[in-house]
Length: 313
Image (cartoon, rainbow, N blue to C red):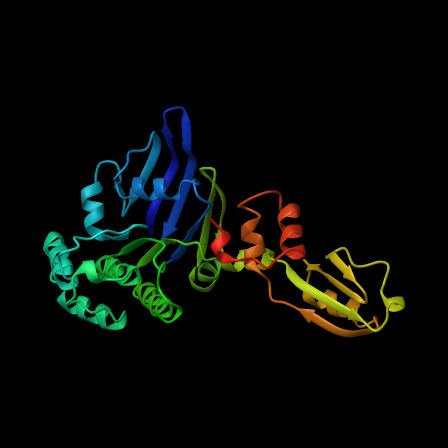
């Protein structure tokens, strides 16, 4: 069953086109990551899906309803966390959530209590006294408390410490176990790799990748380090799947794109002191969609500093 469906979705601001023929088909029970650099069109897409913004052309549907004409009904059934959430500062956390319950015309007391305990959020304090992380927890609770069939979350773990991020991950996994669906944007490629079934990558308003994590992981390069007994034993010819990035003394550093068995068979004939094969790194693969050519990005990543998640967007 399709939860989200868009067809040739376009959005222009004057002469500037923000979205170019975006086609999405998100199935029920999936946790889908929505990635892209700043200005890629992620927020614009989300606002169209929620009926908060009209597309210039194309169609968008959630639950089979038009996002353009049934925005109010869609928003009633979706849990939404914006990237920059704001609440009335003089209200307590409890009063804020009760207010949202009344707006939704649902009794969410049991879920509010459960989520507040899981996320360790004191609800008796005023929002004014909340830290940034506590306000983020409050935003997560309001998006989850009515047990929506679809969650649309924009940077749900920002400002949370690592232990609390784990709690949020577990909660989202429980949502999927219930057969519900999640679409979330994130700067953290580690989060996406760890949590998601599928990944949508948007760049310059166009979908440049829409694939399952397993397929993407199969494309990712393994980093390989070979340390030889002496310089004289270093081979002059290497397999086509091995891209040598750095030579230093008796060491080769490179990437391997073929079957791991082929690498091991080749290494058996060599006089080596050490072999390090790192797991496929999706960070490298994702970054090829963010900037430059694949060759330029891979070369930069392997020669310079390790990838830092915060630099993504």
